[in-house]
Image 1: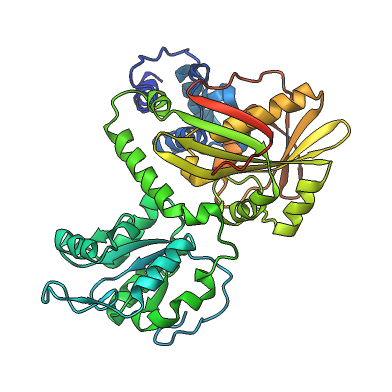
Image 2 (image 1 turned 90 degrees about the vertical axis):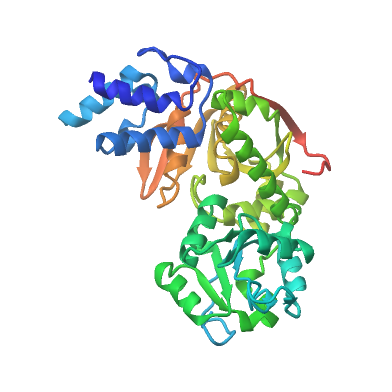
Length: 79
Length: 360
């Protein structure tokens, strides 16, 4: 899981470059959401971790922090 | 269009968004590397200028020396008409693919004109979706239906300069050292959301025809249908315009809301792909959520998945819409309006009931 988090943090740092994101920090409360970022985030997760993000998974709370993204990946791997 | 003849193979109904030109013996007579005194082909200037006014973008795929070719085009006062010119020794299919990526349009919306059958065959083999035109057809090219959009709107006339502004923005973004949000703030964007007026309807139709990636249903609407909706007291037809320090983006977003007694239904939301990284779709959703809440109505939204619009699905979900049920292919979303985020502070917002005759 720690490995996953490192990859996620690295991806997010392209968008939040000057900030060191905490694992449980709500990235959407930072005020920056746009369609392209949301799409890139979903595609990144699918490609990097080889999972399929279904419509049902596409809930803001599954993507709101490094912790929740890593949890989603974990859940999808078990499923 | 069938090669060798200038007739259409069949009526595809498809509009070409960008025409890619070969140069030697297509745009001018002669081969520049062998003859510095090349002359423009008869009628070529008129074709280039007319397509430009129609809002059809133009680019170049030429096997030549970049500097010499651009210098010659400059001499002819034609250099400014081409965006992302690919003048190199790569396969033309490669150049064309690159142009589509840089402009961010589907490969099937490009056409390619070249005098050499071998070059057209190479492109046709690798990219069968690209329409290939024999340079001998230059005289009739302006009559081709796929190069004749139904309307020429204010936005189509400005399209090239809007894309050229985008190139300046992209260059700035690449060299920008701050975060993406700081970059957006540096653009000093102003988003205006207004009720669509008569003068907006042609552009509104054009948006429904041209927009695929950020489009909630993929439905196209005719001018007449849009006029009826605009006049209807049960509907809100909203149109969004954007500008920033580099100039105007034009009218880039459209939303249609059906207002029923106890609920509003968002029938259509679409945004031009040129603004997909600007956050304006989310802002437009946010605006409609606030209005629905203020009017004390439920807010639903219709969504029809296509092979291109997954980004719009994600946009809705990330804006807090939940899938309530499915009606055939159609997904019905609802937003409980309990958690409406604040507007971002990197963009100035103007809301208008009545649009005025501003230039965008």
